[in-house]
Length: 371
Ligand SMILES: Cc1cc2nc3c(=O)[nH]c(=O)nc-3n(C[C@H](O)[C@H](O)[C@H](O)COP(=O)(O)OP(=O)(O)OC[C@H]3O[C@@H](n4cnc5c(N)ncnc54)[C@H](O)[C@@H]3O)c2cc1C
View 1 (cartoon, protein in one colour):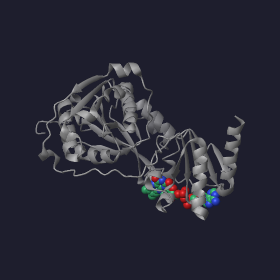
View 2 (view 1 turned 45 degrees about the vertical axis):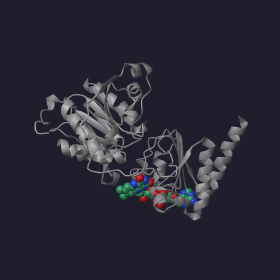
View 3 (view 1 turned 180 degrees about the vertical axis):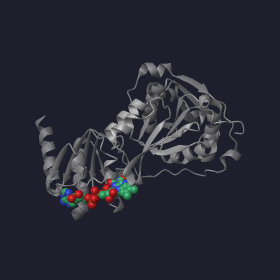
View 4 (view 1 turned 120 degrees about the vertical axis):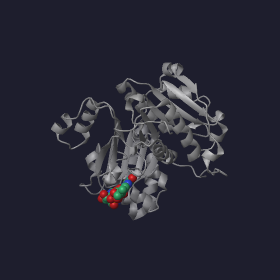
């Protein structure tokens, strides 16, 4: 660390993604980051590298998939001591590699592990980290186009941006989602960001790129003294969690089901089942204990962009919309015709969900039967 000077910006090159795996399974959100990292690396004209850490057995054979989604190179750090995640062990390895190879950008998924690991590495490397990003840009033209579409900034201010600026522009919701803040880290490298799972889109799998990926195994120097904690046992949650981010259809319920909670949830399940989808909920539904926390859609829950999102009895607060407004098709059922959810809905049905949803289920069944 003593001779690591991270203010010499010109010494740092390349976009890196920390490729989180658990028990030999790559986390799906890593592929979203690799796809986004590819775009950033292309805009900067640099390499995109993945960083895989774990035991030999865990990390074996993951490189091709990372290559297929855009990684030029995968650095592999394998050691039996890294077979179980520990903040100390993983942070030591990441910091050693970053100090040696000097990437310009480091992206980490904002999973539980990523949220733990990212800040620890940033503090040790004495650089900045923007947590929970929902949008990233390097190219100023692209950033300006994003601002013109998604912000209320005056056009003159956007046009006046320095087109030569190469800093990573890391955008995230702030003040409970009421405004978006773009943060830069101009004086130190690497520029670090954790990114919300499900926000960025995964690219297409490319067989040729999978075959072309380079792999470099790095020597790992990690000792018990670096790890500091001892994991005695890993206990997996027995219940199966709902896969909201991977689902093509999500039917969510909100406080609007309060009149008959069991019936409201049963109707949502029946409608979701018709499409092979899953059930989600607003924070009001989760806080009321009607659904478990893994069902929550929104700023402090999951971000989803399914083909079809159905909102039942959900008002459409900004924090809920932040997690679902990029869905391909949104259908909202609400008895209040002024509910903000209708502002983002492709199809809005004003009515009592307990009457409307059975009609929707019958209609879908009829279409299926006709086929
Ligand atoms: C920092 C912060 C983070 C947050 N994160 C999230 C988040 O991740 N996700 C999230 O969802 N919220 C989040 N919230 C909470 C958010 O602000 C809202 O309070 C919440 O989304 C409201 O949930 P709701 O729409 O179910 O309930 P309500 O706002 O109470 O809306 C209920 C709706 O149901 C309708 N309704 C009632 N009865 C019927 C009926 N029979 N048929 C049809 N419609 C009916 C009503 O007209 C109303 O529009 C967050 C808030 C903060 C401050």
